Each structure stands twice: as structure tokens, then as C-alpha cells.
Image (cartoon, rainbow, N blue to C red; front, top):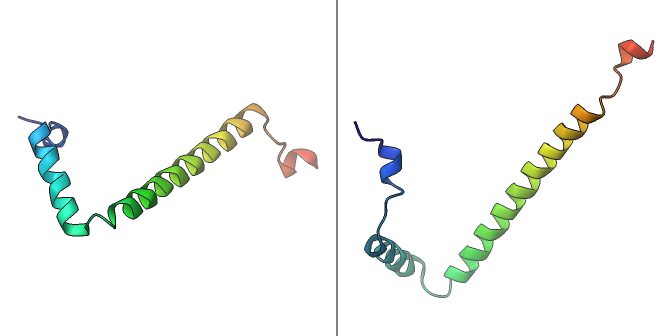
Length: 72
């Protein structure tokens, strides 16, 4: 049985050109740079947030803070 999620990644050049042409028709040439900028900012914010969370987890694993019960 074929894995349908992998079929999506198997796009050829012709399909990609057709998709880009459809996007150009839907949004127009003036909106595409604005959409790409917004997408880039969203991806950057997601990466920053995920790296921040990863760093906090690593810090807490390396330097565990004593709990309040242990201090008493």
C-alpha cells in the first residue's frame, strides 16, 4: 500500500510551475512579496519560540533549581 503523505512530496517541475501560476493568478503580482514577507516572519517567530523553549528545557536539565520543599 502506498503512503499517501509521501506522494505529496513527489512533485515534478511542471506541477510546481502550475501551482506557482495559480498562486500568481489568485493573489496578483503586487501581493506576492507581501505574502512571502509575512510567511517569512511567521516562520522566523516560530523558530525563535521553539529555540527559546528548547534552551529553557536544556537550562533546567543542566541547572535544576531546588524545590521549595527541599529548602525548608
